[in-house]
Image 1 (cartoon, rainbow, N blue to C red):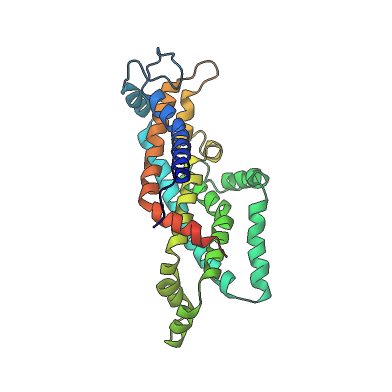
Image 2: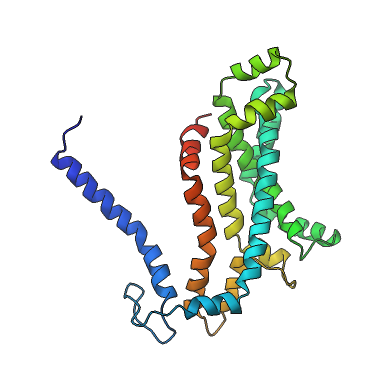
Length: 273
């Protein structure tokens, strides 16, 4: 057992200070959400007359109920498609040693290098021609394609670090490829699947520009776009913006805390390949 030394004490003090530093933005966010519009004190000053009416006004005026439902719908379906497609695409890429496998893998990785703005106008015109503008389906299709290369990269790296003995044993027992994948391989991907889920949830949930472009002019809107209604050219209702932000981050934080062990395990082992 290691002795508790003065060096350990200093390290603990430094880590506590760093931890408090990271809590400052969260404190400012929550503190500002309880301030009245007449409270002009600094962001670090506690609210003089805390009020919860900001949350009521933000919920009603921005239509956060419908926006949350729309964000949840788009995020859940996009993430489910990404997990399903990326895991199945990564399996042959990681296990097959033929040349086409390497070419296909690097083809997917090109998607990581190219900025998505290059395809924004052609995709917008395609969605318009298909009559999907204003529909959440357009965003699900966009995110499924846009975020697939990174998810395939994570899955492929994790699969290459897994020993193939389980699959060989399944093949000896007569399992086909699909049966082996879903009954043997996919359960082993649980750590990296947790990482893929939370990273894609963050990307889809926080995106502002794409929903503004694809859903503009329709009654459908996502949480970031709904909160933008409080920011005007001459007047901005920051107290309502902060209250709305607290409401919007709550679902993501709940998912993160429920999956944090899986996420950390996925980061520590999934990126080795």
